[in-house]
Image (cartoon, rainbow over all chains, first blue to last red; front, side, top):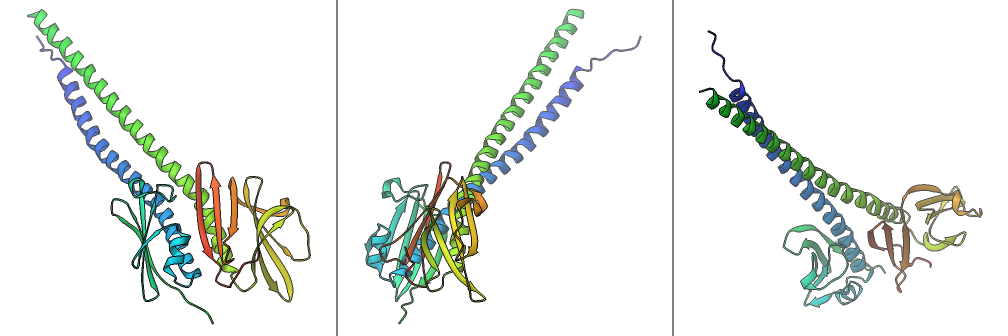
Length: 135
Length: 164
């Protein structure tokens, strides 16, 4: 008499292996998805920061390196040689408590260093600019 | 003995079904999460492409023409426009940059011609394009809107005061 064996355990083992393999690849995939989202958010923030920093640089140059006038044009507060402006996530001026971006302008001998960073500290973009007075 | 075997088989079948259900649920969540992230990325890309590209295009154009008396704000057929002047072989030419019919448009023509808004080349979609000059006349603020996204940049006219 031939011995009949159920195939169910084999099926269960196959399913379990499939789920384990799927879980592994899903974990890798989700990690890639998250990383893509972070990169995309960073790119968006960087785009705003670059435009904002260029704006500040152009204003600084247009007023011949005058920090008081730069502060007025940027609606910022000037402390010593340092100017700080807070922006929300759409790069609209806001208060410190609602800030998503922080832009600082520091001036030293006519050379300004303009940096934009996230409120939680990550530097996004920075450039140095010198105002040239003609005539 | 037979009853025991049947119980074991049905237990295994139920376990198998549960595993299949678990697999399906995991797959569904993974797909849903992936779709959400794709949507987010796509929305950020769209907004960047729309407003930032327009802004970048206009800023680059103005910087390119930034020589004395070449940049001015005016109008074409009643619509506000940035006018960029240049001279080629002693002939004066104008480049108008303006928003018309949901697009950023550019029109390059000899200065003596009077053309209409639809004569320009449509460059890229936008909802609104605003530009203004500062009191000093050497800062040009450009504001671009597309959908919910708005981008703005201020530009220093290095060649001196732009004409409003």
